[in-house]
Image (tube, rainbow, N blue to C red; front, side, top):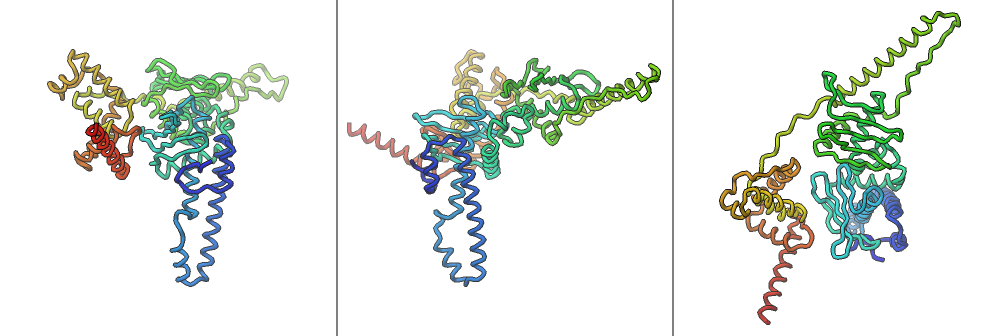
Length: 465
């Protein structure tokens, strides 16, 4: 069987052997982690020996040895190749262990798998919806397609892969407080994990199993937290009027809005180092050293102790409200301005050029149709007559932020490449089966030339007919 990444280095005999055995993604991940560590250790030892040898070797011999080394077969290249394989195996494993069906929504990433031309494609996007990794899975083989993952994110995926190989997904997923998931998976933890952790901190510090946040005036505020006898968390948003998160059967069922997610993200940063060990229940037993103590003297210690416990709970409640500011509702956000036909048209063009995908393109077209229908006109006529007049529709905050982001990037691209360069990218994106990385000039040039050759061939065939 071919190497895990085609055209990405040569596999060792042991590596080809284990891949040909048809191992599961978990076993493959464990093997890749162990192999990477082994080769890193070998490379470190080789460098140490080379340094010791160099100290007693003439400079000319050292220079000659350096020149004769082939980068393609260097230890660094092999280790880098193993890192790419481990990242890809981590993606497959995380989706299989924590995802549902063909999708996994993590705190900071989205992993999807789909079939294109009967081949299984894995795609990873960051929290800004930028595609950072894309590869094809063919049986037990993985073909590297596109990798723009920054080094810090690649290091995070490698660490997650190592934790999964050592601990196993089941052990990680058993913690209903989500602390283990966040410690072991980081931003690859299931979406909503940070909110679950915050809820457990709140309930532990207040000493209650049901608690609603309070305003500074002591009035009931936005969120309610509850924990059932199984330790499963529920968060209710009284502004929205429904449960925005539930933990059921070790699965986080969440409908956190972007506003809610950002709110709990900020709270998590404040309390992430908190101890989740449940506090001991107040000891209400009363020691009576003398049997003949009066009834008043017997009950007084209990009353004093109970008052102290009540005051402690009250102080903890006030502290949690003050420290993590649950009582302060976010400032009401103004509604995004209604888009104009010109803005929607430019956003549609930007989405195609930037390779945002067919789902976003169709969504923008739907917005344009809805706006035009409410005016009783065709969108094209509306564009000609009132291109800069607001349409009678409302954009969600997510749509508005995405539109502004895409328009900024598109306008910067026009300034950088010019109209002709953007037109070339548009041509490549609309004729390519998969989105093209606009920063990869060689890829754009190659696909553009390929498309031109295909058109020339078609015209030649038509003329010959």
